[in-house]
Image (cartoon, rainbow, N blue to C red):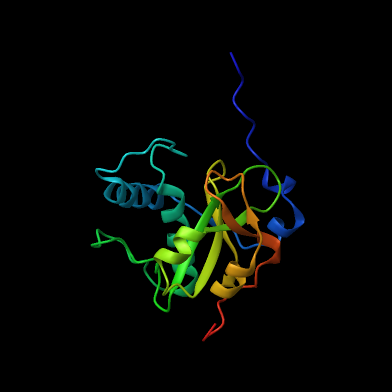
Length: 175
């Protein structure tokens, strides 16, 4: 029998991650996010779940980013989804689960870029499910994402920008 993976001690994180503002997730936060994830996933097949619901980490990212800017994310069943806009002004939040000590990368596929032409800004949020906390890491403009290199071995080829190379929050007006 394999022993469960050890929880990552926040003190062992990469120096970039240690400098970020980490926001605790309460049991009520997690329940709220799980309910929204169930709504989004209703009737959709999920061949490779990251957790019981693949939308959960993204919804947690939206919740935490929304708290920072003082807005509620666009939740609830929307015809055709949210159109790639999680917050007003064409802001799309991408969340990546923290794995190991290094900062995650912002990934955006060509399909996402084509499907959501009104998205102007991508925000990356790191989600640490072991320690029940999340931290917005930074943001990039659509043009910066489009110019970023493509990683082929992600399941779907995607433009990527390392978290430590993103612009500092908050998102600049008119970006």
